[in-house]
Image (cartoon, rainbow, N blue to C red; front, side, top):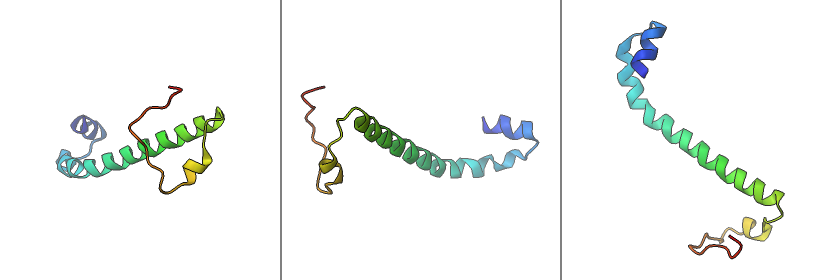
Length: 72
């Protein structure tokens, strides 16, 4: 895809190697953004339906267990 875009824009195709070496870093940033967005959406939705336990949210020692919730 990079070859097609670079060729269409009239840019040198030689920079594909540079793009390929930087892409994993960009992908890590994109993944971190998606994960944080999902966490924010989950907390906002839980708050909207009244299911947010703020004591657990603020507890730095709170951990997610492997057991499901009874209501799910």
